[in-house]
Length: 323
Ligand code: SF4
Image (cartoon, rainbow, N blue to C red; front, side, top):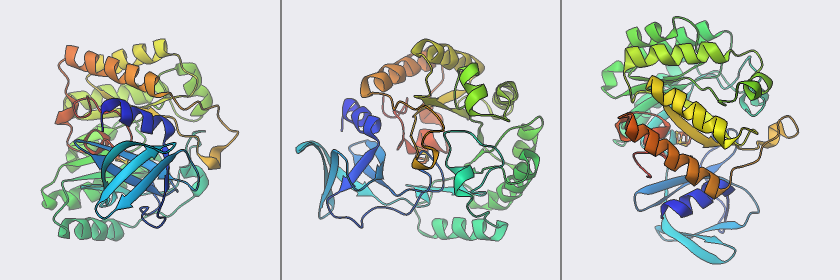
């Protein structure tokens, strides 16, 4: 699968299976939380697509091989990869599948899912370890009670997961002091999501969150965890201009943060609440190339990430891996 084909597939975001039943379990995180998805690997590239009943992209299985077609024309050949926990090779576990905040593009506050107990998360991680495929652990969480409460809960898990001897990444809603709690617990990497680099759009789509507080936490995180180990999701398709995206990318990279450029996903549970235009393949390619160029210029390298989306690469054009 070449870079352009991956961009095309990401711009569509969905796939129809010619043999239903091969889709993975419902996801509790990522763009299609609450929906089924499939991971398709072709050469060194992998893409995650949401499985739907009807769309122009079709996936056909023939033994271990899989082909992806667009309107009857084969565009990629590869195989379907089974996720371990949420994604291949990682235990990517969502602790609280609910959230007190109400970001307008996010399905989690609508899903009002479970809150996994400490014991359940440890059990899941042990099962993943027993497969022999586990390479890293990523803990993510909505905010059930408060950001402080969530960080303490995740920190306790990090401490108990240290004996696994694997890299551990954490993504929670930040607050002053969060980095010290996670670093002292033993986390290797953190992700605090800015979601959009356009401050006006941020105020509309993330009511109750503070743009500045997230930026402050990211800046401090680079001092404590080091460059190449701090990440922030930036959604493309919420109405922001490419100019504001380039400025925002530069600002994050100047701080030593690796931005994750994520195509906006119009989740059915959020229909009508936010204007989303899924980015075209060309837009994603242009922005990913810009990101790669700026990272190179500042001496940052996505391939050094130990956990999370820069390692998985399913949902994005990942610099250092895809381009
Ligand atoms: S890229 Fe990130 S959000 Fe997407 S499947 Fe992989 S780990 Fe999940």
